[in-house]
Amino acid sequence: MKVIVIPTLLFGFGQIVNGADLYSGGYPSSVVSSLKYVISGAPNSTYSTMMKTGANSWNGVSSKVYVSNNNTGAKMSVICNTTSYNTDGVVGRMYPYYYDTFGNAKYDSTYVNIWDVTDVYGYELVMEEEFGDNNYFHQSTYAHEVGHALSLNHPASGSAIMRQGWDGVQYTVPQTLDKTNLKTKWGY
Ligand SMILES: [Zn+2]
Picture 1 (cartoon, rainbow, N blue to C red):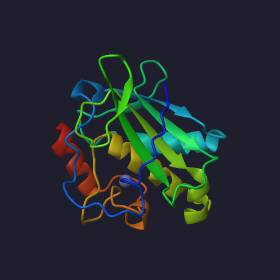
Picture 2 (cartoon, rainbow, N blue to C red):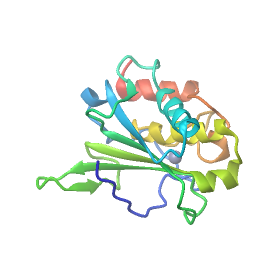
Picture 3 (spheres, protein in one colour):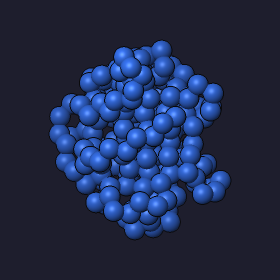
Picture 4 (cartoon, protein in one colour):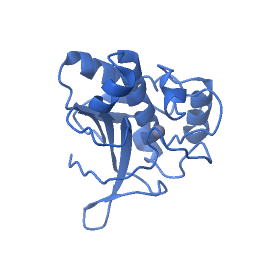
């Protein structure tokens, strides 16, 4: 899958974004019911396990949502970035794309379109500085970013892994508010 990096500070840790808990855009529901992802960039199995555990933590919440690691037919890339440091303290980002009529991937900067693919990044060098070697915080970051790929925005209040910064990263798995929002978006 082609990876395109477009600089943006939206929806990273450290910024305050208020508003609805959900994006209007997202994958088609037919994709979310069996969303396959590839893992890339993980320096060792500890990282890849952590990334998969974070992504898979959204399973079992809604009967309409299931994510799995499967290179065949994958529409999400979960990427461990171990080289980029200068990202303004942002530990993770999610970039959604749709294909235009020419087949070119277009970045959906407003999160309102129907997505074909997403790229989910964890910035390990920033995480190391922010969180140290606590794997649970790293796992939380990947879970949070995959939550964005599932059309979850940052809740303005409440306990949720989708809260920004330390408010969210203290949770290893989706909380009640996260689960409610996921079911509101995709169904029970
Ligand atoms: Zn976020």
